[in-house]
Image (tube, rainbow, N blue to C red):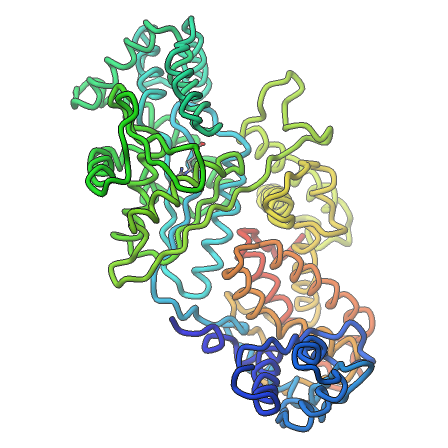
Length: 626
Ligand code: ARG
């Protein structure tokens, strides 16, 4: 596979320093050190230059050389001109590196086009992102919101680096739960053309409240040592009255047999769920539509083939009429067919991985699903590997990743609930965010000096929606994804601190500098100022801002590699702060001379575009006025 260095941005000084230092390490220590990490980091203190290389510390220990001596020999061997000044050895063996001021300006020049320093990913295979995956006939909950927001952000990062992304909405649209709702609604004599989500929800609950438990099925699952997700699934399937279950099973058989009326009703059920999903997605500006729907039902004809293949490979065995895949390193097997012949959630996922690697050709299949399904994905991935089903047609082994995100908690640190104790629905949460954002924007517009003062109400509402969803998305993405996060609207919506609205506001403030300076803003990622006057990097704050801007391409590449959007959030926050120091210390419109003024306007413009681009990768709109 092509190496990452091929694809690293030419405008990123850190990558270039790393390459040069690695070469020097090889020259000093020999070719067996070709993979040694020179440990190059931006300096914490400008007094130590722009970057520090700390690799000599560990390498000294490894080779028995004094780190300071080794550092000196690396410095003697390294060729950093014309990028940097001659490096200096400091302390016990650090190497301090200062970029030449002219090269900072040249690198900025290279980054100042529509790419902003972002380079294409060298992997030619598509990426699959499994996201959203709401269940038909049930209210969408905040977990689906997280999956959608995180999955969409990751998809945008890959697309930004020119990867083909398949956003797979693995809808829960098949099997007994749906059949139960269908059966229930038919029993109630409902008119299927006037269904809404609350009605489906009620029918789902009514269907579940049927009666006695089917203790036998559950006992069998427990005896088999099924994981928690599977137990819940079986509980869902078995908990209700045997009669209801039997009737629902008959409904399912009829549905699977292609009964025309049932099929129509099933579609009506799906349409109703999807209509409200699309509403929510439009508010969220998430790029998901009917073309992304490949739900459980898509795989229904492939399920018998899954069982047959495992049986033929002797990787599954029968247990009391059921089929299970045993694993060597744990007692709990994976149940892939129930004793009544029914397939499970896991069976569908096995078929789905196979499809995604073998037919879509994806070299990475990324599941953005609640952390509680960790065991499920561990089992599914391991079973897939036993079959070698995770291979692209050109033989590349696909990387299978479950991003198990944490729960959304209320300010009381308990799972988010409404005042009446019900689960918070996705819709109510979005409505609140939009309302709060709009109220904040309208309040600010009351100030006669605000750039939004006097805007038509409709425009203010549009900005308010952007602020509201910016707040929610940023709060979701700016933490380590595996951690639970507290949904605190007051904190998320603030225009100060590490929030979405703060970054949006930083962007809008730069836009208003341009309107004051009478310079039109470009559209898209291209520069606003076409008369290219050179960058002049003189003040410390200018230099810090410039070096921060130069990191953007590497940060985007990094997020795609480690799948951690919070790194992009942290970067954008740092950029906004570097910009704010710059703006306090370096007059732009009132700069001393025209060359400085132009250079600083260009720095503002580049900052604005990187902020807008970075926010866009997070799925957050960047209004020009706030
Ligand atoms: N519908 C499932 C749920 O709501 C999530 C599906 C996730 N994707 C998958 N391929 N299993 O729990």
